[in-house]
Image 1 (tube, rainbow, N blue to C red):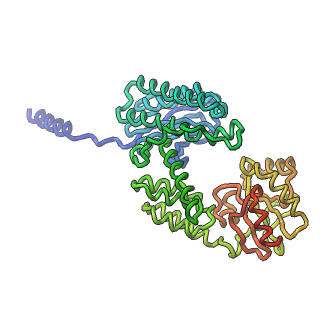
Image 2 (cartoon, rainbow, N blue to C red; image 1 turned 90 degrees about the horizontal axis):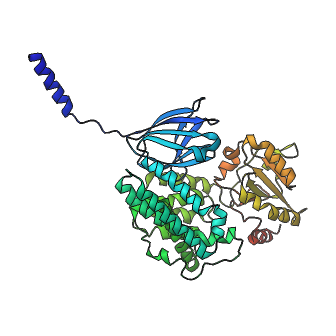
Image 3 (cartoon, rainbow, N blue to C red; image 1 turned 180 degrees about the horizontal axis):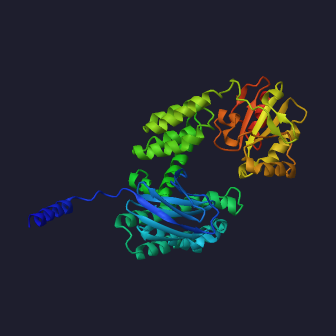
Length: 457
C-alpha cells in the first residue's frame, strides 16, 4: 500500500508540473522530380532566414525557430507564401515540374498557409497577367482591384480555424493591398500601357487620404502598408528637396524621421540606406541624417561601416583597382594599363535589364568620344557559370570599348572597393587613376556630357 501511495503522489506531482511551451516549428516534406539542393525560407525583405537541406530523394526536415508571421518558401525560382508559428508541424508536398499548382500544406498550424495559397490563386485568376492588369483604364483597373479584395475577403471569412487576431490584421492588410495597387497604378500604367507622361485623373487617389501613417502594428504585419508608407515619405522627401538645397534621397530620410514610431523609422531608414548610401551624391549629409533618426544599434553599425568605406572613394581619392581582368579580345587588362586617359567604367551583367537598357546610349556616347582622351570600360559581374553568356552578348550586341569579366563577380576587389550593391553603376576615373565621380551620370543622362565638357575631354 505504501508503494502504491508513493506512486500516486509522484504521479500527482508530475501531472501538476506545467509543460514547457514549444517555441519552435517543424517543417518536413518531399519534392517530387526534385533538382534542388535546398529550400530557402525568406523574410519579407528577401533576406534568407533559413536554408533547409533537400536530400537526393527530395525529402527534407528541419526545425524552425522563427517569430510568428508570414515568410516566403523558395526552391530555385519557385516561390510561395507560408505562415509559421511556434508549435506548427508543417508537411509540404510538391512536384518540382509544376510547383505552383501542386504545392500542398498539411499537418498542424497550416490553416493560414492554405488560406494564402487560395488567396494567391484567386488573385491571379481575377487579375490575369500583371502587365494586362495595369494596362487597364482607370475604371476597369479599380473594378478588378476591388473584386480581388472582395473575393479574397470571402475566402478568409470562410477559412475555418484561422486565428481571430490574424483574421483582423489580414482584413486590414487586404485593404492596404488594394490601396497600394491604386497608388502604384500611375507608374505601372505609364510603363505597361506605354503612355508617356500619364497622370491619373482627379480623385483617383482620394482613398489614400484616410491612411494612418503611424500604425506600428500594421507596419509589422503588412508589406503593403510598408509600401504605402515608403511611397508617402518619398513624395514628402521630394517636396522637401524642391524647397531646400538637398537631394531627394536625403529628403526622404528627413521625411521618415518625422514618424513617431521608432520601429517604423528604423526599418524604413535602414531599408533605404543599405543601398542608397552607395549611390548618394553627398555621403556625408546622407549619413548624418540617417544617424539622426536611427536608434537600432546593429543597423547603425552596418551603415557606419558602409560610410567609412565610401569615404575612401570620395572625389580625388585614388581609385580601387582591377588587376588582369579577362578582356573579350583574349588578353587581360588592369586599370593601370589605362593611365593617361580618363576611364568611364560601366559595371553591369547580362541578366540586368536596366544595364541592357543603357547599351544604346553607351554606344552612342562611345562613338561621340571615339579617338578622344577617354576609355570606356565595361566590367561584367556575371557569375563564372555565365561566362559564355557574357561573351555571346558582347558579340551579339556588338559592344564597343574595353569589355572585361570581373575575376570574382560581386566579390571582386574593384566591386567591393566601391561598395557596389546595385547595377548598373557608372564610375569616372581621371588620367592619374584618381576618382572624379564614384556615381557618375548614366550614358542616357544629359549630365554625363555636361561632366565631360567640364573636364574638357
